Amino acid sequence: MEIRGRILHVHNVAGVSSNLALFQRKLGFEAKVITRKAHPLGYEEECYPQWKMLFALRFFPVFDVIHYHVNTWFRREIFKHLDYQLCKRLHKKIVLQFHGEDLRARSMHQELKEIIDELKIILVATPDLLDFIPSEKRVWLPFPINLDMWRSKPRTEKEHTLVVGYYNPPHDEREVYGIKYTKRAIKNLKRKGLNLETKPIYWKPHSTMPAYYSSIDIYVDRLGMGWYGVGACEAMASGLPVITYIREDLRHFLPAKEPFLISTKEKIEETLEMILSDKSLRTQLAQRGKKYVLEIHDGLEIAKNLIDMYQRL
Image (cartoon, rainbow, N blue to C red; front, side, top):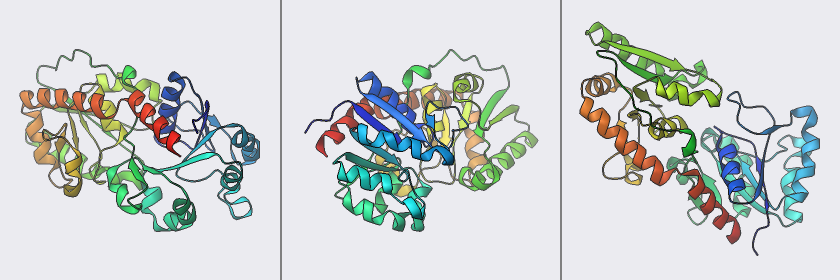
């Protein structure tokens, strides 16, 4: 049975739902994103806080595909998974997608085990999550990037000063990003006499991010996760060389010529010194990164693939 035109994304992680909905609309489908809390980066979505949650229940019977991100709409005991049970009875096409800690947390995995067992397809945002899902139903869906938003601009490097950008998250996320290692490395490099500037960023409106990437020369992604994040994709799409950490057992997912510089937290100082001192390397990485994002993270192509998956449900 072919899907009709209405797709509902439930919850929004790192803007993935917003980008999927954007490209599904470009393909001629009606696509909506509902959340319980407005995203601080200002992604396109409809917010229904706890006191309005029941109002959003009206969408589930009229949409043809229900694409859950992380969890169902109702999580509390009294109405737990009510929306999911309703969609099952109405024979909706249902997909569940995990994005990270939601699946790594054993408690969450156990809470949704029955739903995972029932569904035909479970999507994951990064390859390290594949190990948590039975092989016959797991699919890696790369981050969908709006390539029209991220344009490489001619970048004239300051005569002696390069700008290093990185995400500076709240304290509970800093270990994931290896922030203390990055800051320590930059401090040590300055002591060695390297002339560089830093430009950390934290939760700015997403619409301002193209200007941010245009203002830096190198982007340091998360160093404690084992796979790159959405920020790395946006930086590569903007023509920047990127440093990130990829687990050894996941590197077979990458092309032979890696699109970024791989570094551990412990070796970030050495890695930064190398890239800051080598303009040719920065140029090569910028070119390879841009090519990789065009091939792997094109939001329109990912949306087309996702529609095909919906069709098979």
